[in-house]
Length: 68
Image 1 (cartoon, rainbow, N blue to C red):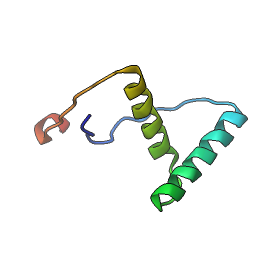
Image 2 (image 1 turned 90 degrees about the vertical axis):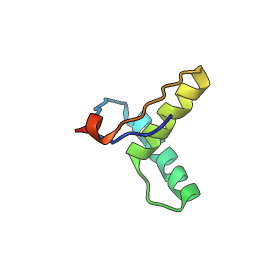
Image 3 (image 1 turned 90 degrees about the horizontal axis):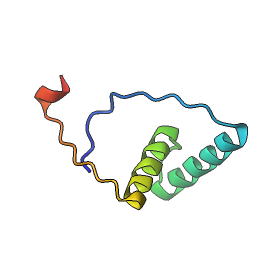
Image 4 (image 1 turned 30 degrees about the vertical axis):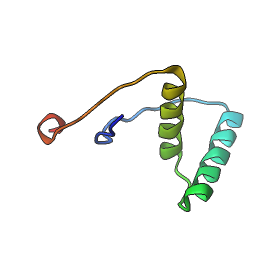
């Protein structure tokens, strides 16, 4: 899967415990990568991992012309 420009925004509602787990996973990801915690990066990784687990394959190539 090739990453395109990040132009999409998604809002979701979760429980406080879901948010705590997400924060903890993001902190763990950041520690492994040597970076700052990012909920967006963690959610993108979780989505890609779940897609792979389910065998969902999307090959997306976005050219400059398609992006504008």
